[in-house]
Length: 200
Image (tube, rainbow, N blue to C red; front, top):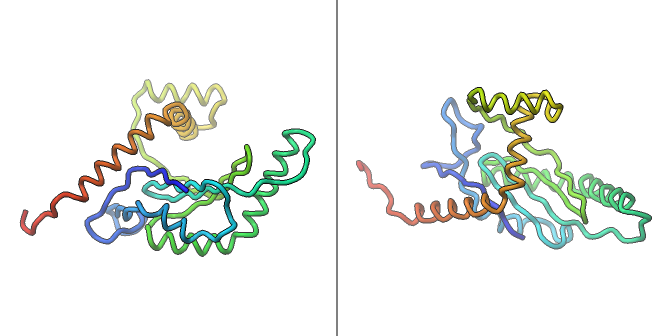
């Protein structure tokens, strides 16, 4: 089981979900131990092989590998159908327990929890957050999005922007991983630094 962490901000007081509080955004608590927590909390037998716990400021995504489907299949399409069916069964059979685990994790880490499962070449994510991100774009950037919309790649500018972000992520995963690792080291050094004294 391993974890891929986005950069997590640390509040000065008690952690809380980013949607809590009044007008000022409340930063979520650090979640570096989420990988270990889910390792101990997940029921035995749910997953085999590796389980991925991915954390960002708003959400924790848990994706596990299901036991393989036995039997012979006529072709890859038939095998993929069997894998999708097994994932659907897992989703239905574990729903109540996953809800309880998510409730505990949300209380602990101040983030929503989403689930997914993979089996062979098939992977499915269950309900995940769709978080609006506000940004300002100049005309050249807007024209890129409008071109994607006009070409039918996306239905709107927001969908085109999400498509572009996914594309960048696919082609720069190694670089992004190195960047996340560097940021985690910065956070670790910051935590080891001296605490500010009253009046500083």
